[in-house]
Image (cartoon, rainbow, N blue to C red; front, side, top):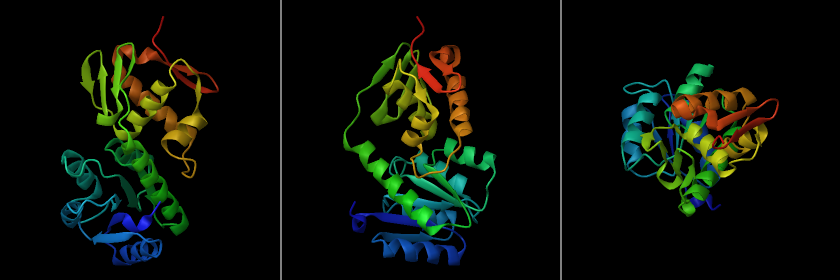
Length: 231
């Protein structure tokens, strides 16, 4: 990947963190924009960075509010976001991912880990946008990957990014048993530390949204999951 063509927006109200992250990204060949408040972040996002590193605790708008507004704006909704935050509870992580964040890094920041996550997120974003994927239909579930749309029995149902990615991966391997490790590597990446329970939480939320079609996702005890239309 030619990083010199990639622009990254770094948002944090702590100058030391902004300077540290910017220095290391520039050293890797990225173009870096910065912002110190939520309002500035939304303004800088109009310059169309390829990735946003976003703190949660900030003045004016916090990171969660910024992410909501980014996803509601057609011009910025496609930009991948990685949260940088001192918050480390499961609740914060799940909330951020449900709103559409691509990844989540807890401070203090490990620069090698940060750079690996940045490269992984950019790579996945490029790969997913290269060719529009064909719609997938499994019984009452219809998935339109390129538009990030899921219809359940004809009704459009919103799935946050990670849940969408998990469902899509299962759909691409319908009728097959998919183990948790394969799901973790496909959706979160092999260089991201995520526990098996994270997969189980996302599958539970997917089932809730599928409603009476939740049974399409079978739990294969001790292995993983299988998506198929019940006979």
